[in-house]
Image (cartoon, rainbow, N blue to C red; front, top):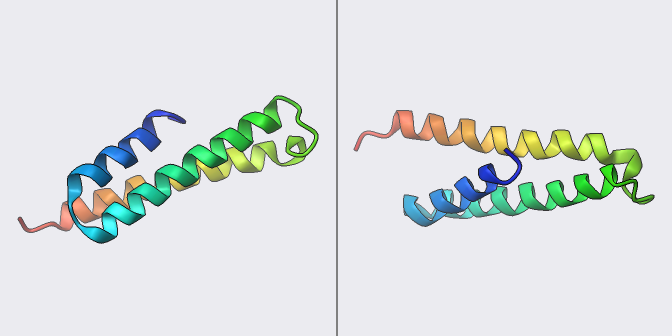
Length: 80
């Protein structure tokens, strides 16, 4: 989930063609990867991130699930 979902964000950004979804998908993918890296630092006992490792993990999951849910709603409402 932590690598495949950001990859899906980038694929959707490349394929969807609507400016909002391109920007939103890229932003979600980058934010998800950044939070994942920070989460990994926290779980490796890096003193700067150890106290917020779990919070960052949940933030990573939330970013991905919100993007996936919004995309699903968008695709269900599409009239093409």
